Length: 117
Image 1 (cartoon, one colour):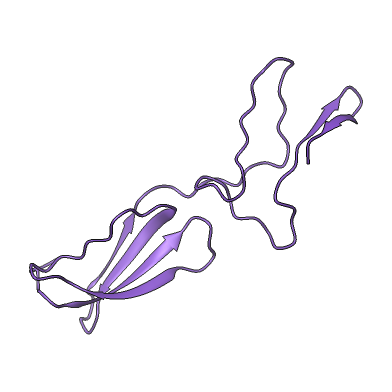
Image 2 (cartoon, one colour; image 1 turned 90 degrees about the vertical axis):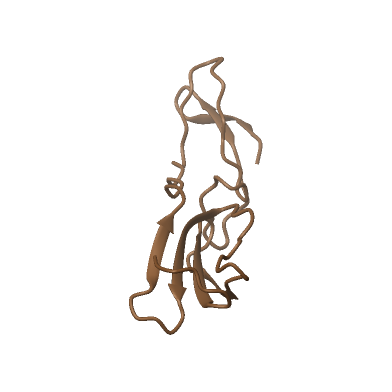
């Protein structure tokens, strides 16, 4: 908060849905003291700090982080099922070494019926 200052150095930390560590950017305000960011796909929070000013920091939460998807979905026969694809804006981050995705249809006593991995 405070007065808009042209040419003011600003440090931004962008918390991304798909990354463990924030992305940091050092910018400066424009001629009217504003910073324009454009589309923020996958960003869940922004921490902005005025460089060289004590206490000049503020965090903006853009949305709630996506919950981790359960590893198992259960559906009744004929029921439509929607799955998040890894790499989409709404998908949770994937651990290293994990296959990109897979789906296995299981019926009855747990025997796989169809595998679409």
